[in-house]
Length: 206
Image 1 (cartoon, helix red, strand yellow):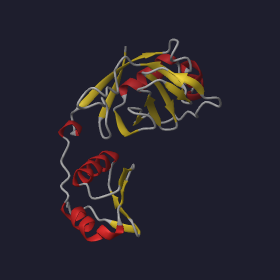
Image 2 (cartoon, helix red, strand yellow):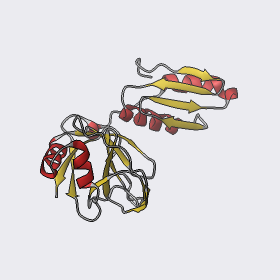
Image 3 (cartoon, helix red, strand yellow):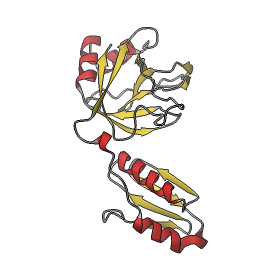
Image 4 (cartoon, helix red, strand yellow):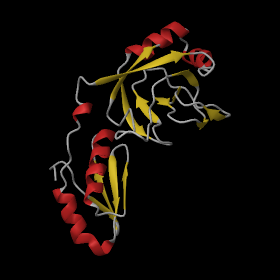
């Protein structure tokens, strides 16, 4: 196991390993799942929790100290994926409200949003939904007081410190600023997710 990884037993049947980034957590969780030692493995923003059968403690401990975490070359510096966004429109109906909250014109908002380099922090709460950090200072916007019962796939919203992209249609409470035509989740592909934790993103006005 890499020397920087230090399993900490936080319960009789749970180990926790602190990591530096969400991308590292995802890679470590994937490597641990390949060993088939644990009953459940959960990757968080800065840690991985491993729930196991206490009767297999010795095997689990050995596995944790021998796991090899591969480097994901697609997440290395210089690899930036571009995501086009059609700002405003019917889907981005909250753009004017968001701009009023931030004190920016629509043109300035779009310019700042597209100039920044963003980072995918995690995937959830539905398959492919991307929590993407990197919003400029002052872009923190609260969630809607009344969530929408249905948001279309590809809708792009911002809330708190994140840009979020809805990969699938469903309910949502993020203020919407536009829509992307990118397919973020395709279960038929070997790599079903277009974006993954650690991936760097630049938005482009479509």
